Length: 71
Image (cartoon, rainbow, N blue to C red; front, side, top):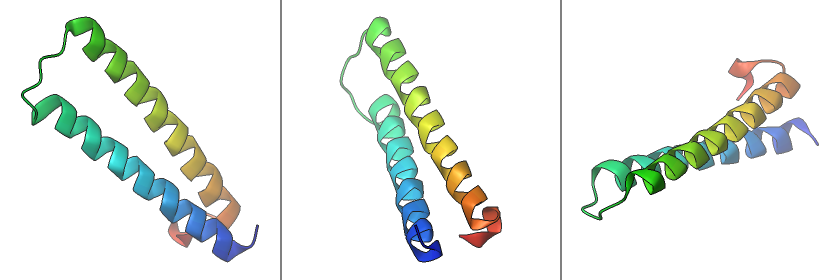
């Protein structure tokens, strides 16, 4: 991948992470839907795994670009 392609991918992954965080926050704080504790725990675990995956991908892309200031 070229540096421009890496930068575009990095921005896309950062946007996905932001969307994920906003959706999670909305689901747990701004809705009136009832959710059992088991479902809430499963949602939290899935959220944490997705966040971890996005952050790892961001770190790899930043490393390929030569540091976190490159994006």
